Image (cartoon, rainbow, N blue to C red; front, top):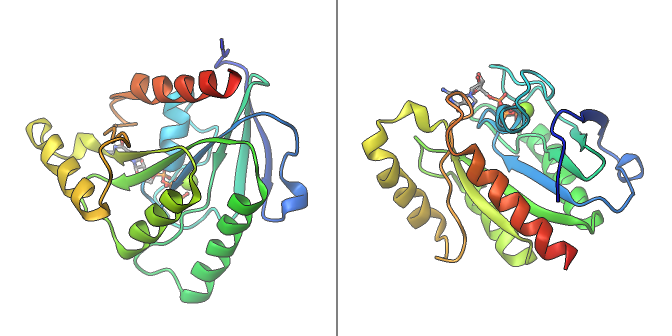
Length: 200
Ligand SMILES: Nc1nc2c(ncn2[C@@H]2O[C@H](COP(=O)(O)OP(=O)(O)OP(=O)(O)O)[C@@H](O)[C@H]2O)c(=O)[nH]1
Ligand SMILES: [Mg+2]
């Protein structure tokens, strides 16, 4: 599938299922705690600065943002499911929104689950990971901000993440840096592979 990355547009922010796009395009979903770098990775993959709003204030985005990429796929920027000081009631609301999304949308091609490379995955990451494993959805684990650790240590940090989440060998773990544009081609490769499978 040839995708023209220049033809990427914001579609809608939504919390209610009746506002989710309801066409057949496959969804590529970015999930992770607040501030982990979901919006930054999405922008980096498209070579855009701020198509998805990214910033230093965690938890600003409480809705699900949908981006139409060349009328071929949607990039779906989920709200961050937690951060250190997120109030419980807000966390519950966001979890409910995310759960509604996963329950309603049938054309999810790939979930990109982001975790910060520098930190051991949290309880919430483990819950998300187990949810994805049990859902049978196709997903990859993507440690973000790889530029923040010495390059010689990247693999060690990935191992910690793998052990903490208990990631089976067949699930890819791809460390990235949105800032330094590292390994973005591997994420595109994972996306292309899932789309090819879906097409056949
Ligand atoms: N050094 C470095 N910083 C990054 C990278 N990716 C994101 N950041 C920074 O991390 C902060 C959060 O990034 P966002 O992309 O807004 O994170 P998010 O997951 O979308 O956060 P929410 O929308 O709150 O859920 C910003 O200050 C980014 O500049 C990266 O690869 N390297
Ligand atoms: Mg964001």
